[in-house]
Image (cartoon, rainbow over all chains, first blue to last red; front, side, top):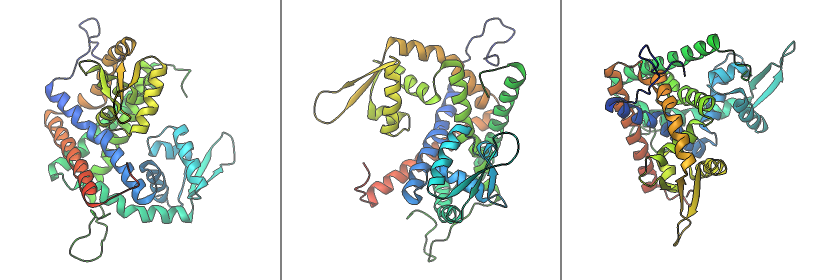
Amino acid sequence: MANTAAGTNGPRRPRWLNGDELAAWLANSAIMISLPAALDARMQRESQLTFFEYMVLSVLSEQPDHTLQMSDLAARTAASLSRLSHVVGRLEKRELLTRARIPGPGRRTNATLTEAGYETVAEAAPGHVAAVREYLIDDLEPHDLTALRRIGTAVDAAIKRGQRDRDSTVASPNET
Amino acid sequence: MANTAAGTNGPRRPRWLNGDELAAWLANSAIMISLPAALDARMQRESQLTFFEYMVLSVLSEQPDHTLQMSDLAARTAASLSRLSHVVGRLEKRELLTRARIPGPGRRTNATLTEAGYETVAEAAPGHVAAVREYLIDDLEPHDLTALRRIGTAVDAAIKRGQRDRDSTVASPNET
């Protein structure tokens, strides 16, 4: 927690959120928690895919050869490799994708969309975009769309900065 | 999918996202996916709680008697009752909360924070707020804080509207 309110003023004291910050944080939970839950429920109802499953198939469908290494797929879906492996296993059983070990050193695996997987994600896409519009995009004024883009970009940068700081300052033998 | 692009113009055609909308949606995934994942990893490292476990304990700690009915707790954490039950069972085993059936008709259950649970959430809170500041709040200009509040409020309203529309137009015997 080196990056908390510890400054030159002595012991670290929590800087609790002020009124405006708290209001923003609470409203943010609609984006961070309610939105993926709502997308998830709707995708399952309409396409028999969880939102995360849809994301996995969708990311693969955007690759020229419909193939991505598992570690890249994990990075692209912001999932841990263990969570991804679990979900990919489920999708493989449904024959929506296949896995294949990559020859050579290390335990590298590719995931490839099957034709059925491509059809599934293509069929699910219109419902997905309709949900994204209904729950998020269509209610936003242009300046809020721009703000959302700025905020998301800032969050992405802050998270990556945090990872870099940790990687460079802490040797953590317990983590991969 | 009654609430998609179906209009008076005949068959439903997907309204794909334009460039600005797509950029906002992609940036939004940092808030919706990377942010909870980063908070989760950090909370687990620092406090041995998942972000969702922290939320559950935190919501209970804000109640005057540290007690909430499971269905209310589910609504307040945007979780399904089955997901919540699973997590609450885990927290109960760690003696951070207790469950008790509410007398009377129906299967209503209260969850109550134990003293150990209260101490746990109080100890985790400074690290939590530091993470929220680092990943989200501290990098935002005041006008983006205000925009985030507006966007979150709009998302919340859109999701609730969607639920109401569904409840009123579709009799869905397969859903609870």
